[in-house]
Image 1 (cartoon, rainbow, N blue to C red):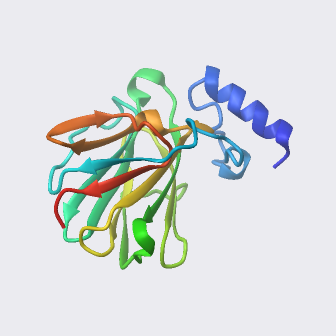
Image 2 (spheres, rainbow, N blue to C red):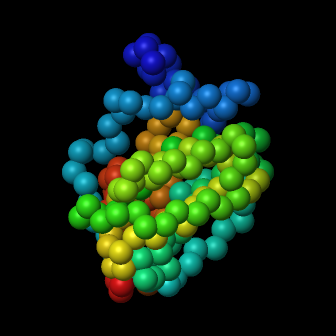
Image 3 (cartoon, rainbow, N blue to C red):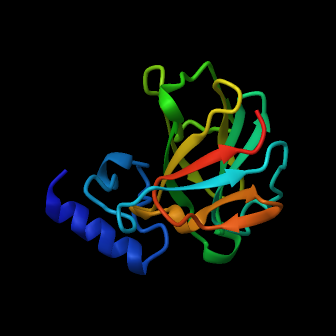
Length: 186
């Protein structure tokens, strides 16, 4: 991708919701290769084990992360299509910490325009166009291992839209991109 295309895409993302979601669902035109989200420091946060997040698909934008326990993670996306009239283009990269492997990977509610890619033994990439539904996956790694979550939305930083339960409260927005989530129990 040319730098001018990337700059145009990032500018559009700042002013028009889902501007990068074209009819062809071409993610290659929107990947923010050199986009830096935050000050470069990667932050960590606890994620409560076994606590699920509730959402109304089509009502709000989010990358929701749950740790179900025993090494099983659930990551899924929602969009505010009901209010905005646009779909959301998500690019979510997750990596188990400390070099732990991805043991199992199962997609959830993905359509033909969505893609879930296993990046070898230590990473997963979800590229999804979400509107009135959810798109996501379940990932299994070693019990108690943390997860790095790197989120992009419509060609821009997606960390303000990452949600998880930690310390008994719902966290709305990650302070860094990526954010490292550490389970409270294996």
